[in-house]
Length: 368
Image (cartoon, rainbow, N blue to C red; front, side):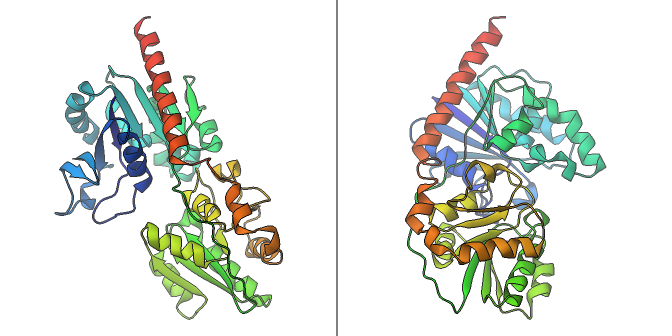
């Protein structure tokens, strides 16, 4: 089967971990099918090191510039996409922005769309102009033959905009070894893996560390990730040796940080799924997270605590609860709570189910 992946999120030389979950899905499906990837890329992200049309990480990749603030960009993108669509058996778009070039055009192939974007889950986070634009374009979610979402939380939002077939297909989390954590009364090692953006609330994480210290708990936080809030965070913690900003790390670096930690902390305001939390659990580390979002599908009392109240006191209480009873959170037991749920073979099977359903729906629509 020839599958055309179309995505606005994909690794580039300047941002090697951006959209890596889409790349992982493409590689997964390419092992059993023939996959081509179209990256609808912001031109500002391209460098001379990026493949524009060629093979990258074992996949055929085409990069098509698409400025998000250019109203004519989707028209130009469609012209480039059309011949690629014609030679594919199945179209597989990812994230809402990839739908824009399809507006006003008939798609003559079975079409699966996988939604990951937090904007679909929470359009109220936009400004007034953004809410208006989304209200005018949300109907594009009706167009694909099948829409998948990475969590029940996001799927419920998708269903507000379409009546056609839907299903949950989570992202892949690669297998990890659940190594026992080392505990010491001298320090409590916390880790976060997330972008430094308002939605992840790094300021609340810092306040939580300080609240724990005020209670006599020697907490330390290591934050993996980059983002626009970095200058403000650096200013906030420049005299605080308990918070370390590590920047973006590759998979090996993230794994090492999870193994070295005792608790994963993320005071997120909302998540569509949160791969880093699943990775933490698969490493055997319990999580303390915000309560809104797709993490409700897998976080439970056996692997962490979801915090409803957005205060440092509430997060510190949750961290303290876990730290005082680490015997309840043995690494193997924590990892077992997600075992197999996000495994590559399960995700591949779910995608193939989605492709079959899309093909049936496409034939049904064509026979009307």
